[in-house]
Length: 233
Image 1 (cartoon, rainbow, N blue to C red):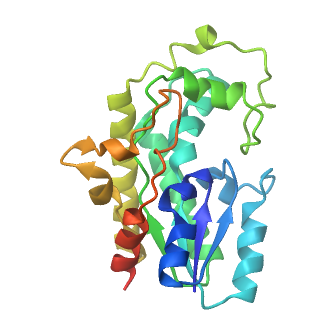
Image 2: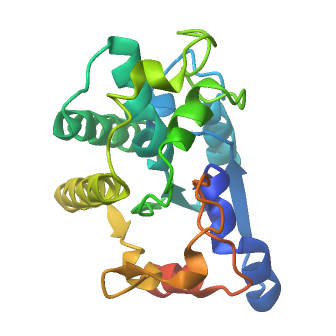
């Protein structure tokens, strides 16, 4: 038995389609906006950890597949910069995230598990990074209410100044640091980028039509999840 743990990005794997094709028993713990930061936040609004622990107590042999970090890189980094009034060093931010993830996995997870690397950023208009954090009430941990709804993009444009190429470089940095941590701790890690890219270019079938979308374009195939299960064996 397997259980994917993540946020709305889990939809890209077409888990239901794969279940139908293979008969695999696959559960999901999905919370829109779930982040690494929320795993160690006792005041988390989403309360993902209690759901994980309840599932773990009932299914101690199920293998967890963690897919977290996209929210932290696409939105959490910039939110923290706005909150603190400064553009933080991305290396320090990523190092902190990896440390939080390591702490949670080593202290709270007793089931077998593997960790997935995250997607490249696909948000072509960075105003979307701002809007999701400050103008869309979808309940991400720590967002919105701490600062208030009156803030406008022009007020913090100096923080939301990174190009798509730069933001994709951030996700590569995160994945490299995550893989290194997993190797050091002997955690199973799967880099999903080989199935996403043709060379250095994101496959066209995954590029969202809307330039203000943070999800990969959904497909009817099961290439990604097949790639993952081939490496779980």
